[in-house]
Length: 195
Image (cartoon, rainbow, N blue to C red; front, side, top):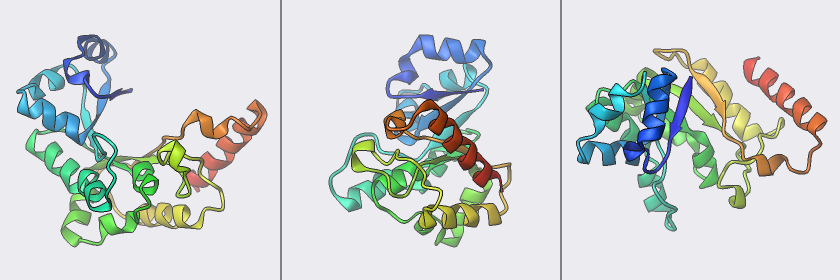
């Protein structure tokens, strides 16, 4: 079981106590881990969770592309995980697409690609055509060529641990579908991810 760690969770005793009671792992964005590190709270996080996975993500929306790329840099998540003896990272593909970046760029550098293969535990997924209003958390189109090419690329890589795909789609993206259509969509999507 995993529990997401959002802003302020480092000090949120209820969330940490719940994670400990459920023997859950925590997802934490890189800036949260860095904040815990500065405050000397990493051991506190570790003692209350089975594992901690670090996601590369923004701590607040950026306007300029160079600032966006720096803030969501996967190297930052890898470094935060390694420095603090954490158990791996989550690649935020949803955020990559939300800011119209190319996910293949994260794997272009041989050193970083090797680090990602050793430390990636999960990928947060959303469609490459996500509406800006959805912050990159739009539906995955079953014919979304850019998305599926990247998924096929990931499936062709060797990872140190089994890689998990985690849908990070806003419920608002499905609001025009009936419950039956939503269920059919999810079944088709999961089947295609597994193939």
